[in-house]
Length: 410
Image (cartoon, rainbow, N blue to C red; front, side, top):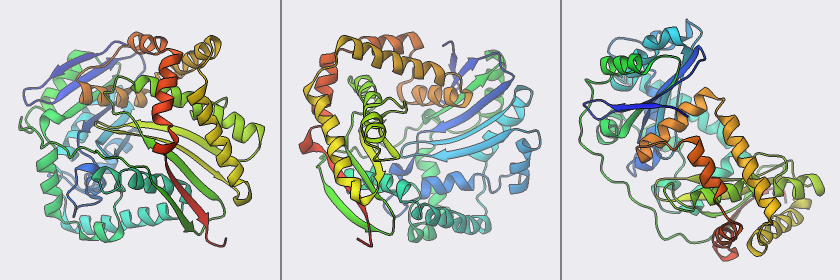
């Protein structure tokens, strides 16, 4: 993967991958997410992202939404526990239009009071919609259980009460505290030359911000395994089993990525899918995932199934974990697992948006991006003994946290 990087005088970093497609993608990633909110600001990072589209010094909402939509392009944004993205996809001839709009809403939003109050109702409706989906809600409840008492465990959306209490002053306080120029990366994928990208970024981004570094985050520590069963108005049992995972810079991160992919990744031949769904026909939805954060991570297995089948499903899941802890992969199994992950990574490169996001996140977090050859090499170097060691650490029965949603009629 070839890419070009440079830094503006104000500290904003830029990374660009030149492609042959006429469709381009670009966006700003800011090192600010829900874990960076004050205790009385739950939901604020996500709220700010919504309010970016509500008015700037030169545009009202209609003009913001129409600026790219009118040429068939798209602009969007999202918030995670640790980052906020504002990004666009468009025909490359509209690059200047896209970059100018992203800069305008990110750095020149005025957050009109009337629009702020209206947007609160939109987000509360989003919260209520999410509360109607137990298969989604359980993931946030599990993180809150896993990271109990720490800001990283809080729901990104916030609660109805916390959203209602947010103020315009809260918005400016968090932006001033977290939107520091040395913690912002502009990521781009498209056919434009690096020279053109640099000129556009200097024009629209260089005059903003300063080099004052953000305050450090409160690190997570003191993980304890917990179990919780909750009655819900649902037809199925919803279940998550998991543990704290490695942080993004951990030496064993790639090994855990491979282990998770083997266990319950997206492929239909994952161990959990073959054993629980295909062989026994128990669960329609079963998967595992691993999400690394800057100082911690989360590994989790999810399944939804009928109440009468749940006990068997849980036994099957725990049995697969036991196999990973007790039996090393043979040479052929290990080779196949590696080739599967390498193939998935290669296919993901076909997504322009996915590549843009991956480049931006890596450059923000590590100030570098590994080449595909380096990524493949790190996968190929993993041994069966390393997988066994990680499986015993991460899937130790004594370290697993368990959350179960039970139908309230039972």
